[in-house]
Image (cartoon, rainbow, N blue to C red; front, side):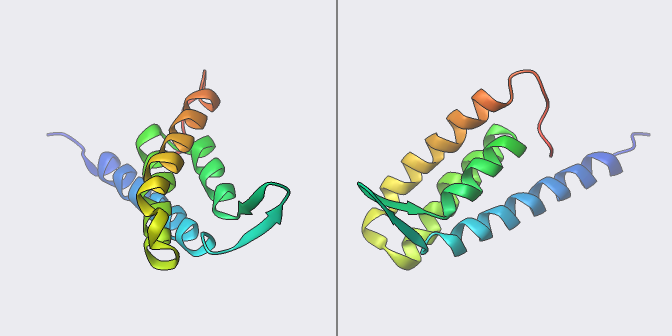
Length: 105
């Protein structure tokens, strides 16, 4: 008989932490700091942190889907652009940061 409790727990932890980071991304997507040449949005901090801590799928979900949902609430014009750009941002940063070590979840 297989012991699947460890896999279920890991899946639950993965889903929970991904959801928490996605919620933080949505909440912080409306806050921006003006910088020369544009704005720095606070959700980029969450995206970069998720890219360092999580696997590529979780990083894409936090970055792409979280930014998509945040823009759907606060600025719907750019929501599809955010899905692509922030998703690729999280995926590319995750690929560079995980060379040689495993993800947190």
